[in-house]
View 1 (tube, helix red, strand yellow):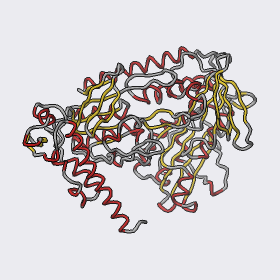
View 2 (view 1 turned 90 degrees about the vertical axis):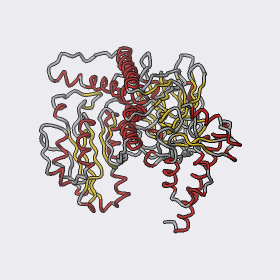
View 3 (view 1 turned 60 degrees about the vertical axis):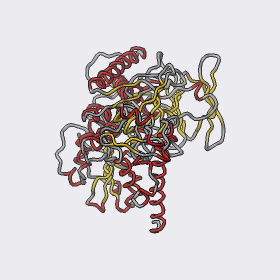
View 4 (view 1 turned 30 degrees about the vertical axis):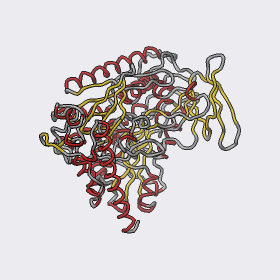
Length: 597
């Protein structure tokens, strides 16, 4: 732990930085507006104050404020940093923000939201409920392959929604063998039509895009289809598709721009490869596909494409599903391999080239043996991480700090280091990149800002599901993280492998392996022995993982212990009931495979 002097020095530095920003930022605004803050006086206007020029002449900003529009920086905030130097950094930020009135502030909007994804839309509509004047800016830069989309952000257009629908298409394909075993006359050579799938999915997305625009209109939120960029602490420059610009201002600004897929930086990556921003709208089947990466996006896409009957290979540098429970992750990969997905481990791509036949030649370097190899594919998809869209936001003009490695913003309670600027969603550092997280954070933030709310977003015990062929639902932390946090002696892991009842009639094989193998699914609880066996990690691998996991999230949120799970009566027959009867621990060395029904 740092000594008191070091802590005090850091706190003082934080206060001084806040003060310097307030002084410099607002002075810059007044200067651009034509005023001369060095000799500024003030005049009252309602609950606030507007700047005066030398000799008492009103600046352009002051005149604009009196006329009911334009930026109106407060002279009260132009004072020296010493005004806040003796206050804790957090208190200084809040105090500085509060010096701007909620009403009569002179800005065009109460709130500008940059980003029309799930979080930004939710926050904007919630703020408008309280009578606030709100604008939402949304603009999609086309991918290197030329793909773009409408209002709604990643989840609706190129993420959760198309992914889940195409995953469902894969599940239906996998279920054909189940149907045959139950009497349905379904042939073994059933064909899938990619064009029909994409058309159905994109039609649904188009309806959602329109619905979001209507919802903003009904909520009296102004939708601006333009790229937003800071040109000052309260000023946003809007650039539309034709390149026309205009500047708007707001009392507060919310950054909700999310992120986009990363590229590798090797020759040919942008010219030859697609990402998740492209795959769900491809006009023709991707055919033989190579997927680079071991992320959940990589495995989900590989799984659904394999289930649709395509030849799919996944290349991974190190581990699968980093940050998730590794025992479950390996079980997922094992299942996918048994069902036809190929994996190349410990390799990285070094270049991509277009062939004369229109295919993509991918050159891979083996990290263990040191040799290179190449193969041709119809499609190569990169799933190697995401980058926050902050680089071109002009954050340097308003002082918002970002994390160098990924461009994300460290914003406790969603407030950045600049008091009136906030951030939610995937752009936040060390927060889950999940749609429901962004939505809830946005709604709660609007309630705190405009309706006296006191509840902050809780980022712990957030449930989520990875939609691989065997779906993976999880809450809390992995076994590996639990051991790091509590120590191996304080961690008890309960586990059971099982086969869903619905699979029991299907005895077909795939290349000599059972199509519905025994003990493929898993239920796992990670408990803290030092805290009354409190459940700190919930892990489910099997059908309908999202539906199974969501209900248990309430119990986890309330601090459920293993005893609470034990005294809960299960629903029979179901896969989720396994969590009410877990009695085999990894420590015991007993066989965790289920027996009986």
